[in-house]
Image (cartoon, rainbow, N blue to C red; front, side, top):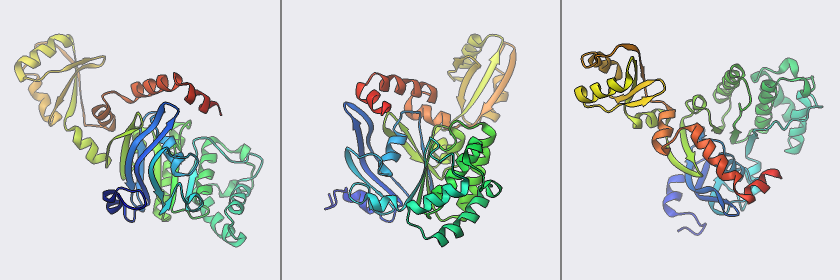
Length: 341
């Protein structure tokens, strides 16, 4: 163990990382929201936390942004210890919250200027940064309008611009598209892609949307406060291994028996038909017909997805995980009290 309290093996690995976390724990009474997680985020990386609501994503970000105190472990952001140097952390980060935090009765430009004052930025620097940022998020023509007249997507784009105004080294995006319609979500991500191309900033995303996690360089799957897998989306999907072939027939139970007898593959009966996990699904399909006597209505071949990854590493799908966490949190008096504050 090093003098700073960090595990020496972790120190060696995390040298130069934008975000460094070692054995992080957060408890609310007898409820453990974050349970001993460790990971690092490299400079310039788009890193994602993928997990159900209540899995510990927002709690972790809140600790890294100094909004909550950790219970155990260590964490650094942009080289600053979150416990010992919170001001250094706050000066190095931008944060886009789940909830809109703009002043509705200020204009877009006034919201940005006010943010600049809070960070002690010279007026000339604020002015120089505002124009390009508003242009990047497509709000130049709306800069002089009060935010209360903005759509939800426009407000989210303004918050992203605000989070970048002081040129942070790390930008935290906590469920940045939650509550937005699918089309607006796509537009938000178009702006984020532009941002990554133009700004030298590390991005830390939390999401429960699989398509957003696909955009990340690496993702950590978090469930019940623990990281159960961490790698690139492609590597995680490759770890699942097999394709899923779904066959809808006139008698799925009989088809299951015939395939098991003829091909030695045990299928799983589902609402959409008989599901088979096989290598090279497209090449496998023609072989099915040699062993089926029942009529086939449809066949679908699907490559592994992040949904499959989540099921592999947690044993349940995202919807079931969210229901389980919700029940656990609602039964804990300490957490209920905290959520009301």
